[in-house]
Image (tube, rainbow, N blue to C red; front, side, top):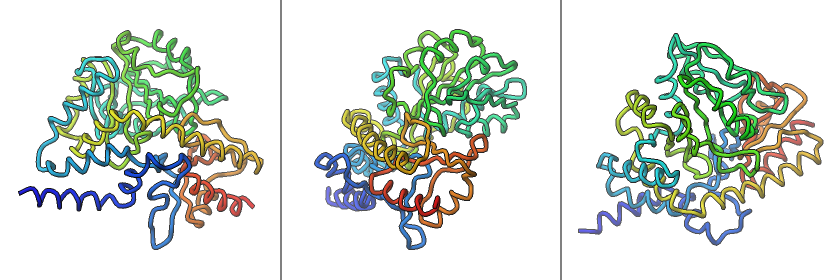
Length: 374
């Protein structure tokens, strides 16, 4: 009776391809070992994908095993797994379970926040440039979007953001995307203390795990002091689960209830939930991901300095390179060399956003970059 299940699991594991094989062996590999799927197949040519700030090392080996196990119960709704992940995250962050809301990636959290706290009478205040998704969702709600330029050293200008009138939601991406810069913890705390109680503040900590700076802190512990604070997290980055779509937020239970009212039931699938539970319990995943990123980041810094290009120091798994010329044609030319990099950011048209991939990926990037830049 057990044999069909064993075959099912085997077939499922095979579909994970090189990622699963790599993940199972990963503890024995060096930090500079090449990652699975370091190049995607497109039109028969190897493409180096450095465009979406993905983690090329993939999920935890424990997450791979959890997904294989969960393949036997995909016929079930994910309620129980969702409850387990909520309890696991509540324990991780020392909050109650009703302070946690799961989402189909942190992208769903941003959409729910815009739906809940913006409308024609309550606008959104955000930075420029920053991650654009929440502004799009707010405009869908017919809310006014006010974008405040970053400071000259790429911090959120919180002093200006707090003084904007008629706003129901403020979005702070920290570390910020696309600049990979941080806004110091003292400034964030001062902003929270000054923000109007009726204004909801959403702090997006998608890249939290990559930061190694004494000027930064997660504001999750502060939700106990600020009932208008929401903190978003994702399993897409350090946990290597971008394709699985799993994220969450931590907030006062009143805000959680308001957001849940706009959410589709069971929006996170059982495979993602199983992988997320295992990932949180695998204490090595975060540290290994940070170490790998740091190792390759040093190489990237060194190569850019040799080539004479300035860049914004990064607190994430990507960075912005100052090309001193318009980035759009460079992006197109790199694509011709089978290298995909980030999109154009209108507020910083001369900057190129590049994901920090594996060492072989970055060697491929620099080979193409030298040719394109002449």
